[in-house]
Amino acid sequence: MTAVQATTISGPPTLPESLRDDWQRLTAPTTAATLFTQDLLDGLPEPARRWLRHAVAPGTPLRRAAVLRQHGEIKVGRWLRYEADWALAPPAGFIWAATSHFGPLVIRGFDRYTRGTGQLRWRIFGRIPFLSVAGRDVSRSAMGRLAGELCFVPAAALSPAPLDDRRAVACVDAHGWTHRVTLTVAESGRLERVDLPRWGNPDGKKSREHRFTALLDGPEETFDGFTTPTRCRAGWWHCPDHCADEEFIRFTLDHAT
Image (tube, rainbow, N blue to C red; front, side):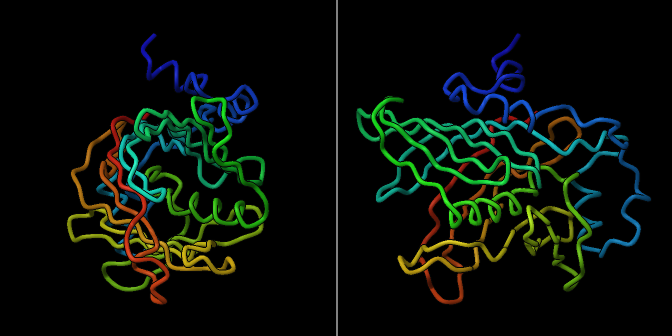
């Protein structure tokens, strides 16, 4: 069994035991997955049809969950490099388990949205508490993140509504909240950008909705019939109220199952 197969089945080795059942629920095989055909795009606005024609090969089973591996940099005061394994199943939830490096220190932990709640928990060398937060604001922000990440699981796109010939809105319902995710699509069908109102406090003030933006400006790769972006830069820096001045995460997608 390869490392990728083992991670897909049981989660990464650093995942806490308390989250292994959640990981397995998120990555359970999609039952009776419909095969992708062009007629499934009838009624969708042109930008959404263009994207899904580009992103999903004919005859591909429309699986709505994925395990992805990525590496990149995240800004926590300063830019830190990291590697992460990521279980993603919109709108049910996600687990993002990562290892980051701060000089000689190794910081391991996870962000998650499962069972209707969000949580962040990070520890130095896996033992010394570094960051642990939960609560309503964290859960609502994590729900927004989950909605925006549907671009990495194209079969999870739900009923996009038209804006213009380059943009469409996908309405993602998660635990009582509806998230309007704006997808910007090139003429080629390539997904270029994702915007959504996401709950948070990037300006240090009381949490509220700000525009969160992901730019998908690198090469693409096809995994199991799905063509996805492999590079992403994301953050609040395109927010109209200037709540932040730059992105806070940059990553490359290494593999997806």
